Image 1 (tube, rainbow, N blue to C red):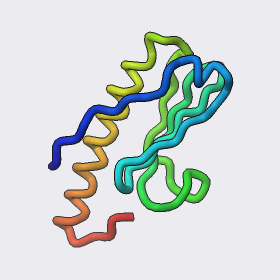
Image 2: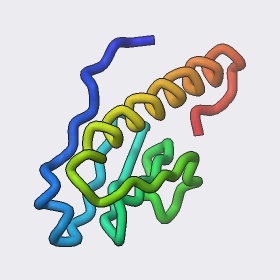
Image 3: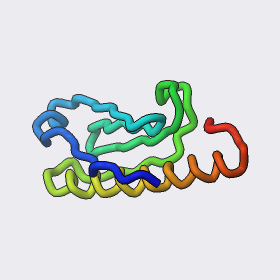
Length: 96
């Protein structure tokens, strides 16, 4: 498995104005939706979240202290994706 830079996210102020943020690393995709909290979605593939199977979701308090926890959770989710991708390759299965 390849080594990647840790995830980073935008400042809290961006989210307090109820702006969502989407990002990806290859076919690993995530969305951060600010509501009463940070709501995170993770999915794999080339499609948008509305047309994909969400493989992980998690909520964090909408506060500054959550930002490093969110980055750590995204790093963990990417490691799961990386292992899934390797397993798919070794089994000869489809990526999506």
